[in-house]
Image 1: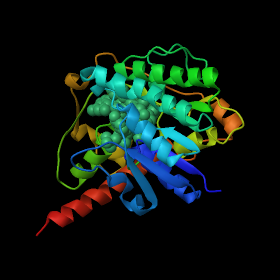
Image 2: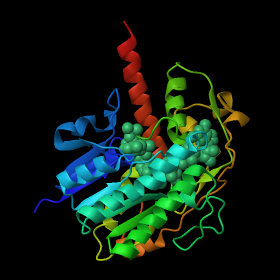
Image 3: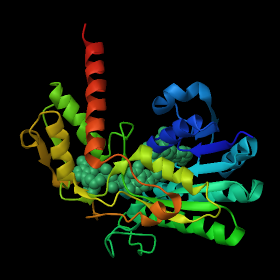
Length: 327
Ligand code: NDP
Ligand code: GDR
């Protein structure tokens, strides 16, 4: 029997990546998209004729119920969220509605329609925030440092709670930062690789960033979505940290990206206090040994390979766009 999947946030980086991965595995793929006056389907453009899209919103319980009722999926991956940390300070209530209560709306729909549907919640290393130990594993206490992190802690615990209360096969993947050429432009990796391409091709001169000393454990999105899928294929539901176990500073990322394009970052990069966050997560580094042991999962793409891949993809894209603009 063909397995059916519903992906929320299918227009985002991870949703698009997972849709491609599951199509290759023979799944019937359904995606949830919210209404917008101009469709934002760029990341799934090439998959459009192979995915069925359903209009629903994390804010609207009835639209979620109707969608799940119609699709009757075997697996649901909840990737939809307000996922940009700085925006969570300017829109804390909306972030709470999407990123926290949205999870309960998804789980309530599953509980009502078919509690045998398997559920994946996209939890985050931002929950560790002001880290209590290093590296962080599934037992490390949470201390979120942004309204986004706080909302994700709620999403994590409500997922655990529905598993314990209703015996729903619900998993929480505590994922550390993961990037790809599909990463949103405002996140630091993509902001840097896009700027490198534009500077290299003479379209920009400066790049203004915030805190260059922050440390993150960056991995490749293609590796991480496979871990999410593996979680839902196990005999019993559980929570897993997904990470590489290696951390780098934003400065390392900048030097690597500029260096790969033959540029010296000291000629182009500035740090501006205005881009610092009200409360920073200074360092994150994950211990994914449980995922390695139980799921047999390990990251395949290294940090350097990832950044080079992103710079190359942006160079190619910016070159194409520049050529298209020339008379
Ligand atoms: P993106 O920001 O790229 O994608 C977010 C998606 O959520 C988009 O498809 C967006 O739709 C959708 N969305 C936002 N609000 C709503 C809403 N009200 N109703 C329906 N859909 C909505 O995120 P990523 O792909 O990077 O991340 C996926 C998930 O994983 C997120 O929950 C994120 O918080 C979490 N996460 C990500 C990590 C990472 O490093 N990438 C690490 C840990 C967790 P639209 O296109 O319309 O804006
Ligand atoms: P993060 O990712 O907040 O970790 O959340 P982001 O790439 O935005 O920031 C990483 C670090 O870089 C520092 N930084 C900058 N960040 C941005 N965006 N822009 C800048 O100009 C800049 N300069 C320095 C930040 O201060 C921070 O320390 C991502 C999101 O995908 C979340 O949804 C997810 O849960 C976590 O990763 C794990």
